Image 1 (cartoon, rainbow, N blue to C red):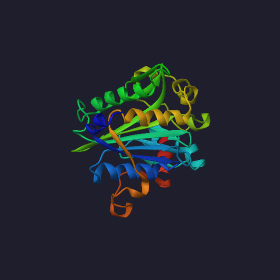
Image 2 (image 1 turned 180 degrees about the vertical axis):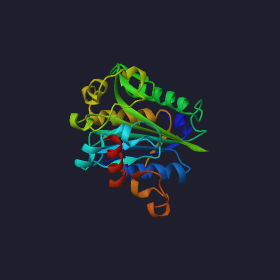
Image 3 (image 1 turned 90 degrees about the vertical axis):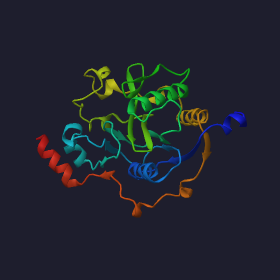
Length: 257
């Protein structure tokens, strides 16, 4: 890309992570959204151990099979963004965009506008590979989901966070209930019929490379290390993202029984 084009693009700081625990990643995202004034792209290649992540307003008893999750010591996290419930592990790839409201032309600070922009961005990433679409709020190949999205919008900034299923364990999907409010295109398909694996379409490293290249067409990307991020430390910042307590999960078990 020519320097003249690069010069006219907004700056985006890119942080590549590998295996960062999802709770730590969500804490970092929340701090960057609320305490930084820079644009950020975070790519976390897998997370350390299986965890269930719920949206800000999701009801635990309606979304998670709490008894098996409790028995198998699966952590359950309530994140600071909206969206649905996912189970993530080392085969999930996370891509997060955090932007100032005025940085992307034609994107209004509303969920649908941000979602349609992200759909166009990822259609570039997957160009020539598979039948990629944005369906309702999901990324799909054909009619099968491989990417779930969550967002949050503040006064001056917004965040768009995606969990990509490069691969998944069939057993892990059994911890998730069929949500009462499911996307229309899902019909009543269970998780196995509804989701698909990205690895059937492209190598893991190629997806990450394609994503970075596509982001570089819209922003002037500057790679930085995790250590060099200058935002308030965990001790100085109160997060809304948190790990649910065993007591909360036990209470949800009694509701389900």
